[in-house]
Length: 333
Image: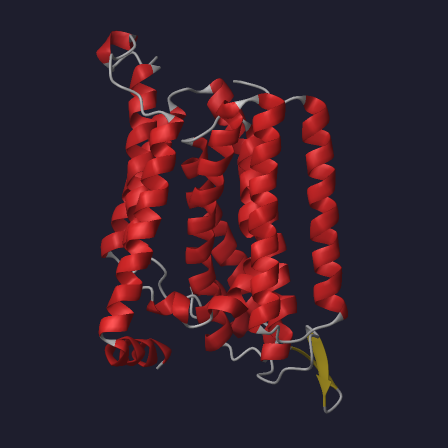
């Protein structure tokens, strides 16, 4: 496992935490529906920040980690956009007031960072101690890719067993009271729908962490790169929510691009596991002479897959905008 210089790691994490703290402070201090211009500027700021970070990695540590970061960041960014689709479903399904959506989204993003941080620590330990775990990671990603492409991968995020359990056992009201989780009606205390929304977001974040962490460990073995790629992918997601809005749901080929990336990385992980094989029942415990997929090729596949999926979706919208709107209305119904 190659190591990024420790001083660079410490400074980078400190700066990222500071930026996230400022973003959270601004989001809670002035809850509002950001304009298209404001959202665009924030998204561009975070993208440029990620590219600057990649440039610093290149100068300080060489091309290996810089390339791994860019490939990992783009992979996590594509998965975060898929995560964003479910956020939209949750916000719409629970009729969250637009002025409160920034605060709710921020909590969802913080939960995503916490869950991914936990899985990064677990994943790093598993990889360090059990090389065969790559077989499981690879198989899981291929299965996820098949589900993503051909199944109903998201389900109904507003009607899960966890949500039904909460509705049965908690005193809930269907009325929002600003951003409060608890409110008083006729002298009785109730939980507001905000609590159910946060439970839905947390459950969604947990499921997406299960996909995203094995995917990026297929690109790099550095926990620092894994963590920073996830942070940069999630930063600006709140603004991207308001910038893209319904357009995310109309990018109908996006899920196929993401599925292809997951399948590709899954195959890459299986090949790596075969190359490093230590399982006694596979080739007698000896390494299997199979080709390994490099980070450069992975980066190309990720970029091309997302570009093709996005362009195909936009062309489809342009050719038949009425059908796209019809599909969107059917989904909302």
